Amino acid sequence: MGHWGVRSYEVDEANDAIDAAMDRVHGRTYDDLMSDRNPLPVEQIHRQLANAETLAAAIAAVEDDFGHDRDAWDEVARLAFCGVVVLHAELGVPVADELRTHAAAWLEAEELDWEPQPKRDARRRREIELLRRSPEGSA
View (cartoon, helix red, strand yellow):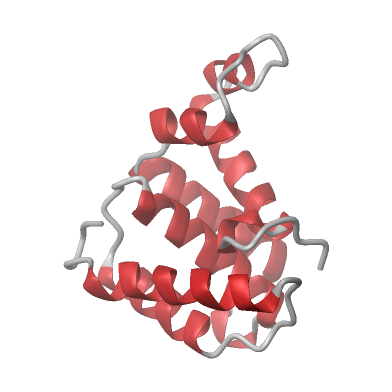
């Protein structure tokens, strides 16, 4: 796993799924916003474009990469799923209870090694709290 941050959605597999979803749902608009000529950071672009469609498309991208049997997923696939769910929840996109429950449970059971581990542990706890406190269908 070639992660590059402590947030769940900063692992390559989650980032790839989110990127594919944004491109699929928003197409040319996303391409234009992601252009090197656009000074907006990726976080602002995601904030502008994230919605229920991008959530569904990102989950579908994870399933395309790792299969549709979530019970058979390894830790990396589960983390990609968690990253997709967490990003959308953080951006205020309504997230179904089933998705939040799976993501929170998988984050609680995460056993991957991170560098730096203490920062990841703190971030993971915040992500779990976000998912657990969000009422059904909302963030």
